[in-house]
Image 1 (tube, one colour):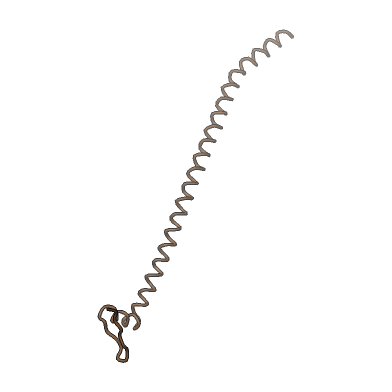
Image 2 (cartoon, rainbow, N blue to C red; image 1 turned 60 degrees about the vertical axis):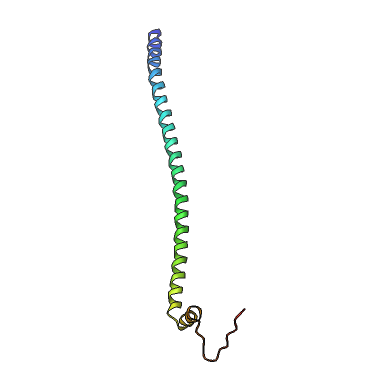
Length: 102
């Protein structure tokens, strides 16, 4: 019986070293997993900010495009031609009176 106790004790001592090594490896792997998770979270936040900025740029460009299309449609009208003739050439309709400041 004493021999069995000694043999069991030796086995436990022998396994204690390998259990420590395994524990250290598992802890290191958990730390690495936590670090990579944190790193991916930071990248995800950066990408979200970039996406918001790009979305705002898209909206701004769509507004610019709409304004350009409205201006192009206005330039095809007779009102635009009349406004241009008044401003650039100083032309008026037959029955209009022009008052100038001194």
